[in-house]
Length: 138
Image (cartoon, rainbow, N blue to C red):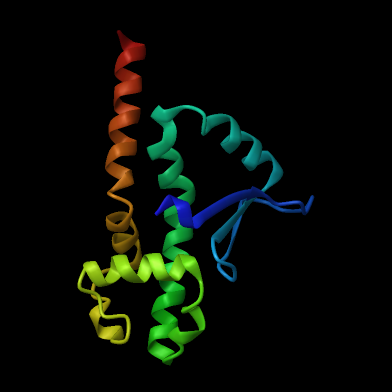
């Protein structure tokens, strides 16, 4: 899943937070300059990967799943067919027994689906933070 995301700095000096663009082969997550610098520094620590995933990838994936849901309801999924990110996510959703052409098969929330697709990064993130606190306390 991470290979379908590209995390880049937002060149707009007015940019704040993050923005998601799913119009290309990868889902492009643009972070404000300050956020990108922090992300770029933190991503070098393997121990922080679950936390970064939970705070950056999960919201972007929720946004993308919502786009897929809307396209399914409107009957326009074909517009995504050539996009690499869509092919990967569609395959994984089918593995979860979600029929992309039946909006009623999206029973769970987009947030729950995103967490399942990514292997429950919240649990890994919280456990990682707990371990860090325990190490500092010792």
